[in-house]
Length: 160
Ligand SMILES: CC(C)(COP(=O)(O)OP(=O)(O)OC[C@H]1O[C@@H](n2cnc3c(N)ncnc32)[C@H](O)[C@@H]1OP(=O)(O)O)[C@@H](O)C(=O)NCCC(=O)NCCS
Image 1 (cartoon, protein in one colour):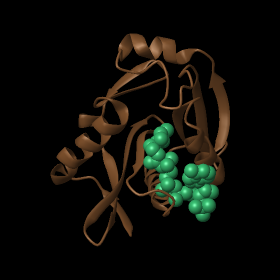
Image 2 (cartoon, rainbow, N blue to C red):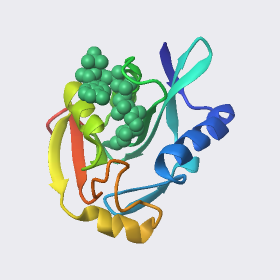
Image 3 (cartoon, rainbow, N blue to C red):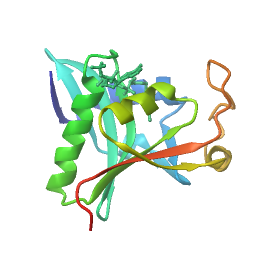
């Protein structure tokens, strides 16, 4: 398995995957609406088959991971893609990588901790604001947990 840059040929596969997970191609983080159809990305691939997707954006010295999806779970796909994003961030001379997940996503919280990212802040109630930008965000997760808070994780590459 390896990680590589997303190409034009990957776009329709990536768009379908994101729509399946996020109810549309749109993602909101910290009050910003992203259209993933226009974001750069990384693909995890094994024997020519795409196994995972990461969309990101670089602003200043920060690389934000906007989307991360592993098609098959617990096979190291998520970890591989975050490592590739880290290399990319270093090549862009970024200071940190960061991302937002939500309070209902317990798997994601366990995963980010396991791969060495730090929980920075819980933005309480922030999803209410996100729903104004993206009304398709459901009120509750499949297990009934209300989706309310944005949880911010980061990986610092250097202190200043
Ligand atoms: C979160 C996600 C990307 C993780 O990807 P993954 O490829 O399954 O994770 P990895 O195999 O790289 O796991 C690395 C480590 O994270 C931890 N981890 C991963 N999934 C976990 C789970 N379900 N429960 C507890 N720990 C978990 C483990 O420590 C794991 O190492 P191990 O398998 O050797 O024990 C994947 O679950 C996913 O696509 N979820 C749906 C989309 C999503 O919620 N994305 C995040 C949005 S912010």
